Image 1 (tube, one colour):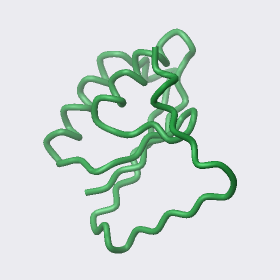
Image 2 (tube, rainbow, N blue to C red):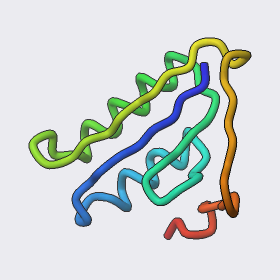
Image 3 (spheres, rainbow, N blue to C red):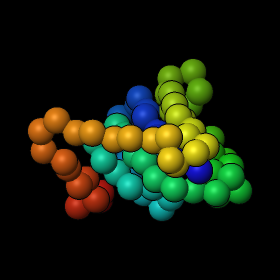
Length: 87
């Protein structure tokens, strides 16, 4: 399946969340990751994230696209590669 993840995380925890998501997905915007993943790996990723976030303050949205053939992506402007920004 293909998954797009968006998040709004408190600054104190955002780098930890990015590092977890980077292990599973491609970082495409400041608060957006995307990529192909299995159901098992997605569940593992979610469990890791649950250990870092504070549910009363943080949010992570998962948009799951089951059929990759029904997915289209277009970009206006520069297509960014955020991988070099992870520290």
